[in-house]
Length: 389
Ligand SMILES: Cc1cc2nc3c(=O)[nH]c(=O)nc-3n(C[C@H](O)[C@H](O)[C@H](O)COP(=O)(O)OP(=O)(O)OC[C@H]3O[C@@H](n4cnc5c(N)ncnc54)[C@H](O)[C@@H]3O)c2cc1C
Image 1 (spheres, protein in one colour):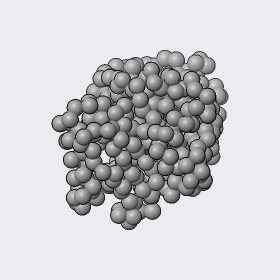
Image 2 (image 1 turned 30 degrees about the horizontal axis):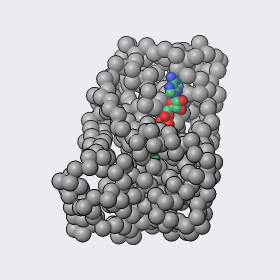
Image 3 (image 1 turned 45 degrees about the horizontal axis):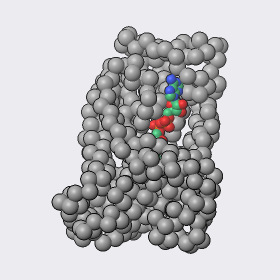
């Protein structure tokens, strides 16, 4: 990867806006396919606020194919078991359900890694990849009206041209706004508290999701005796817990975790993320494609968000294998419809069913979980979808 400068040619095959994990993987994929890529975004270090991402088997396949997985693996812990515990206190509660990766003949459903570590690994690989020119700045203006000759103006004043722009610039995407792609947005009465804990007992590579009345409380393994927490709850309660001392917060977490990991201690900073959802009316138009959170946002249930973003990238690379320009973009748009809609709806339904506090809904949810757990074909199908296939 080279640094962009005024002396470099300013026309590229593709401009990728955003240097989050999805932007990096898109850039690496296009560069390996032989395209001349400009990757634009501020080189801000990702803050460590306890956020980790479970990279599921389908994403591991993509990252392996692109030669990225080997660098990431040492920072990641396998998720060999996924356990769901209904902790709603409802009259209709399904018994705890545990899914084993070995049932799918896999070592793990996926691997959990700190978002900051993942992004740093991908940044290192991108900087060793030819055909990527990096611009450490933001895009300040877009001119998307000329098909085949779009341009962006950087905050430094430079102007870059390309037939195709990829918006990997996150949930507040300016690429999306400039391309006049409409969105549907909504919010949930929940905030997620994130943190990393060391603990006394081994996690045995088990990810445990407690389904509480305010949302899931999930402990996900990290290397050694460490786990990350994503705890979704009412915003006022999240603010209150965020203000607690490390010791008091840890006590609350141990209690909620029913002490399954023994004594715990907090490691590093915590984060708070308000829960929201967003879908777009189209994933691409004549000159722009949206990937990752620029294209879809939903709550962190079942580890779907970034994995969906990586599947966007796989689909975009596939579309550009045989086609270029608007034909490839149209194919990409068509290919993403079903997958994104299905995951968004499934996460929304699961979350709302927990919040509903209504017996018939509790009954339907627990029967659904029981059916998934006990009907072999359904169980296998759901595990495969859950692992990102
Ligand atoms: C608590 C929590 C837990 C999660 N857990 C999981 C999980 O287990 N598994 C999973 O798959 N997903 C998970 N997710 C979702 C996942 O974190 C996101 O999907 C993912 O981080 C989004 O990556 P991205 O690259 O699309 O966007 P971002 O990481 O937001 O990157 C966007 C980039 O664009 C840049 N940018 C913005 N505007 C401009 C501009 N004008 N010019 C240049 N650059 C710009 C920004 O600086 C940023 O670097 C979780 C989310 C939360 C909130």
